[in-house]
Amino acid sequence: MFKKILIANRGEIALRIICACKELGVRTVAVYSEADRNSLHVRFADEAICIGPARSSESYLNIPAVISAAEIANVDAIHPGYGLLSENANFAEVCEASHIKFIGPPAEITRLMGEKEKARQAMKQANVPILPGSDGIIASEDEAIEWAKKVGYPVILKAKAGGGGRGMRVVRSEAELPALYQAASSEAAAAFGNGELYMEKFIERPRHIEFQILADSYGHVISLGERECSIQRRHQKLLEESPSTQVTPEMRKEIGDKLVSCLTDIGYVNAGTIEFLMDEDRSLYFIEMNTRIQVEHCVTEMVTGIDLVKSQILIAAGAKLSEILPEKIEGPRGHAIECRINAEHPEKFTPSAGKITTFNIPGGIGVRVDTNQYAEGVVPPYYDSMIAKLITHGRDREEAISRMSRALDMFIVEGIYTTIPLHRRIMQDPDFRAGNFDTKFMERFLAHKTSTQAKG
Ligand code: MV4
Image 1 (tube, protein in one colour):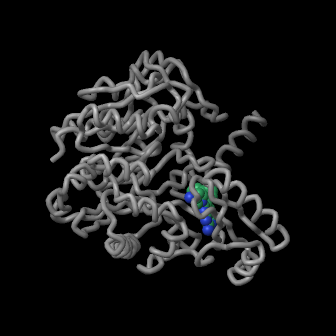
Image 2 (cartoon, rainbow, N blue to C red):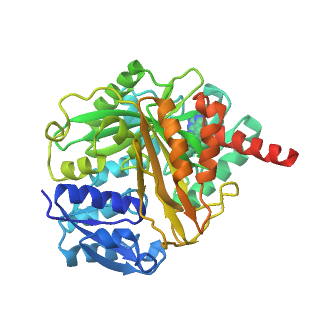
């Protein structure tokens, strides 16, 4: 087992990783920027090293600074968390070259999954359903027109190196294809340094459903079921839950089995998330894979009872799944929901940095809060706006929702704006309560709010 781990991250996930290390009896090293000097991850780690100025590019994303800290502190391993360096294959390689274990999959697998079209082909080989589309890069407008004819409009152009919705364009007719092809390609070139595109049939109102897997270094892979992540705005998830109301035990097993077979073939190791779109007839189609722990991992933890971060560390240290997981993993136990509490105006979504004056964290049965914030704490303007995750668990979805409603009422944050009032309203929404929503839910929800306000 590792003696000491460096956490190459900040915020709630840095603290979450420290929790796992403490439970495992592993010493921790925090790294922090000048803006995060008073953060709880610095306070709760055994050691802390300042790695640079506030801006991420000069601190948390500065590979030489992170590696130097790891060498000075003499750690065995680095946990990258999510975002930042977590899906940077070069960073994983530098870690291994420095004889520091990177807690995540091998660099070549991160690189493979970063190439969205290659990931698609890998899934296709294992019979994981993918959307009809181009098998490979579409090198020209003419080629795109040819493919669109075969598949039928609407289609979507996506960046080979893509992510976060950048370099994506929906094309509804042949006439508009050339301009959109050029726009997607130049946007992708600017964002990812690679303008290559591929194409898929476009699904109008998809749900976003993802599967959590764990894999050890001995060829064992397990699926831990799905998360429903459709409640999002501009590609930022706001609320996630597990299980999805739309996935039956049969679907869960069918997709889970196919993913296990695919990821076993690939030689996947550690935690991973496979994203799907669900269309109106409830068919699931692979879109991409994330090779890191995700923000919303907690809802899976609540319904499986498995500590995913601890599992990541144990797997990286050479444990077998059979040694760290219960003998039999049943389906999901009850229902869990997570609300992302962001330091943002709840309607305008503008960032709201500054000093927190009151911070009352709810508790009680079925309530979990993952946060790095506290009263008198400061939300710096430089980073992601998420300051807490409020997670509730209940015997069923209704109980999880009622617990979420009352926990949101008891979560008092003063001094900055947060998304708490927004989540309170979502909990009251009849469509949300009925499980009747897709990735366009927030657009409709926010439009309705504005119109009723205008009337009022
Ligand atoms: C799609 C799609 C519809 N059809 N692909 C957006 C981000 C990227 N990860 C994939 N995305 C989408 N791909 C096809 N063939 C719709 C989206 C999409 C979306 C997906 C998941 C969650 C939110 C979304 C919001 C807008 C568009």
